Length: 401
Image 1 (spheres, rainbow, N blue to C red):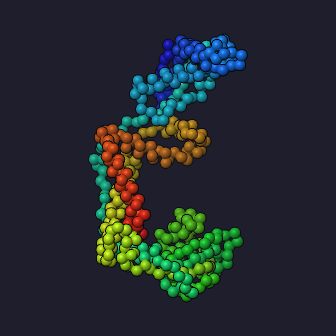
Image 2: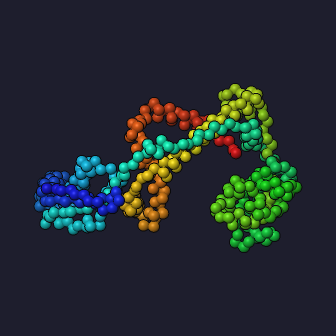
Image 3: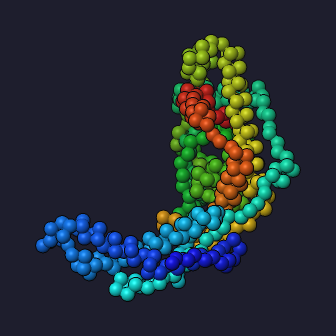
């Protein structure tokens, strides 16, 4: 008669031992032999007429092992369901389960597994004392003007003047790592990029005025770009934005092309390109529509920001104990591809973060009996599709800041 026992071996970490005897698996082993003899195709025998003894000799060992393991799994699954154990992932077989099966000498087998148990915790007390802010962002006229300028530039026609004359010029430059005097660094970074002149700081913009193709200018990154643009320039150059020394590097810029985009006119054709089918005919109506779309965009961003604040608060402040050692072992063996202990340890912080949120969100759904109806799913999908088509038309495009 099969037995299943359980003992604690650590924080939220139990060992389950499944013991099976001959009476538990031999009847099914005999049935498997008979079934195989009826379906096997063996030369010299008609189908269904292969002697069971020959089947046992040829395939008995594999069928025997399958039936023992199948019985072990059945008993383990039944125990987990009966005891209603809330566990992480699947039970992990222990190394002690190395067994040499012998169908000619049936025996009693013990298999051991370890499981990680989901913790008990409360979310309500934290939610009751948590205060979050939802921002209400109203686009300023300056922000609307900047967005209109961005749209007009995006749809404008490019010309190639002889020299830089305006902050609206687009210059294609080659970044060559150098020293402060412009001497190129052997084996240094080399990268081409196209930038608006106004992307540079005011001091560098002034130095760029009058520059032509093949002219050069040596810059220090930290003094050539503001904080926001410096970050993406560093990344574009393959440098670590968090490395303070990276921003101190010097580069010599060689201008390979000077361009100037003629801004689109604010006319009905432009309005219809941005908002097709909206029948916008005046600049005032266009501005009103744009401000409305920007307000919607920032309202969604404010909502997302609040959701992120809630996520971070719940994940970091809800007291939840986790069986870390078990989860590290599970990360090593529980996925499609085995991981080393070092790989599992490196992956664990993000895994822990997401696991806590999964536990919290599942509990909130269960405790509050939350359900999503088919109609809600349909409306959500409709909104996503309409948002996509809005972006294609330009209306839903995130405004630049």
